[in-house]
Length: 235
Image (cartoon, rainbow, N blue to C red):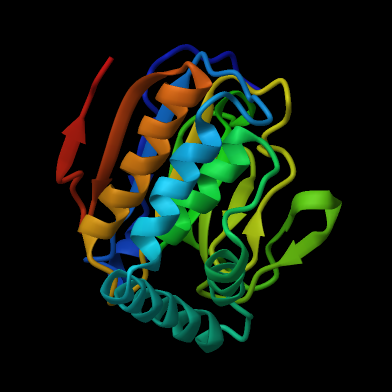
């Protein structure tokens, strides 16, 4: 595990990924100096405000269509997509309550209709690369379960390990805890998901952690193709 500062993550897409998915977006946002509260003052009210917006008929219909797009992509690799169940649960019962970092992850996912991961930035080893797996590669998922890759699965690597598999989940190494202070959210698009929805979800995550986690937004980046199309920094 490498020593971290407030520098934005060094991120790239591999040639293999670019060959298969040249115009598919990916985004990251880093918020530092956070406290992983259980339920800070005003957070429930913030959740209810976002929930009312996403439950509006037209908005919910659009979110549902995007989640169906992810579901079809997962099915192509033979995996169940978690987003439809999350959406049903959220519409019927509201957002989860675990801690502010995990709850914010669900809020970003559901309000934008995209796939988002929440991670402890200090537990990554070096630069991050979006890549395609070779058949038989493995990594340890949450809870220590071994995940075995199919050829061509989309994965995120640091300089040591596969740290997330799009269709199987994130690893145990970068899992957030009560001690996490520097939180990195990242969001995957799949073919058919516009870049703007990645922007929207990551903005929700960053602004929520700044307001209720007391953190500082180091950066928000999102973009498709081979370039980072936008870069926004704020205090």
